[in-house]
Image 1: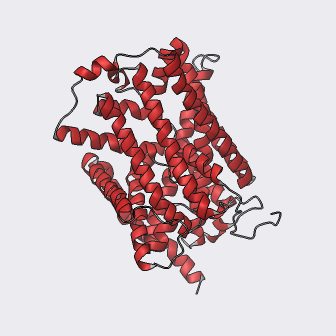
Image 2: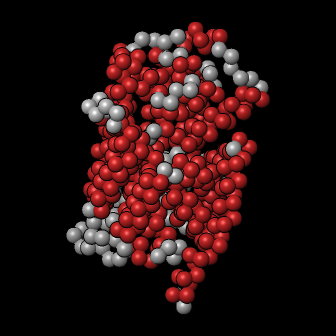
Image 3: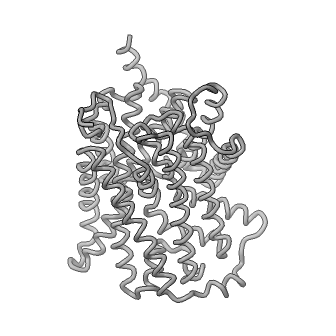
Length: 450
């Protein structure tokens, strides 16, 4: 369509390929190269190590089953905020939307600084002693570059997402293939027979802690529903993108961790902060770590593009419902919410320059499964309250499948409260303070509408 969109109108031009690309780009980031070391510390035997990754993948698949129903029944861009606002209340939507927006802006800053860090280490070979000076400038350039690209319109942003996510998937698959083809089998078999695995209550605690880390690494599989009203044939495209994305992420994670176990003993993986680099050193020798960091720079670009796209849609949706300035609903001819994009980029840069992104992410991490919990609850609420709502896709096995992931989410939140009470207390305090903030956001719009 050549017609310019009116204020607040997005372009319906996306397909399944974009949905798959945004799932992979949003999910597979720095976490997958850091988390294996943490998991191996908790679960020091190969079968336990792999089982927790499969459990996280099962959660994502069952969750996709339920979220796909909501995405097709309420095809509006904005992510899980849209479901909470419709099914629970505007206040619940406010909590979901603001925590999602802030944490994704923080993640944008965090991933961009990792790109700056890895790029700085590569540049250090040519500029000795200058590595640290490059981190923030490179990260800033990356954030601004992708913001400028997406300012031009959703077609360019989606093309960049598909290209960078394809490169990411190919890089991870190439690393897996290199490990199996050129790496030497490690000592994991002998170690597995003698490793002291936790048992009884200790095993349950260790598995819960490991699962928390894995679920955080899987976070992002909901990517397609941030763009529901921009997807062509959402009744078919959203479920396909959701399931393809969850399966693709599960497949890459499983293969990557199996490749790690093939060439490294679990004790070598445990505590490792850059598992990909450790594996690459086995395959490529001393230069392996440098090669791996260079590849990760390319891999992380798709995440930055996804965060830029998603944050602007969340703020756009909240503004459309009166929970932020109405001006943030303005959309340019390319289908980009321009003010929402500018504000989201500004917040990401503020986190980046101030170095506060880790604190933001740690606090908001409590909310991300809480958001899932609200979304799964929304399926039950809307099934009962709006039984005649058109549902082009109905969750398979509901209420059992939806109930299972809902219970899993609640159990996860309970585990977070018990394992990290300090962060949980801060999150609960912020939750309490969110209500007066919600009223302040709502009152100006209320008076304007009189």
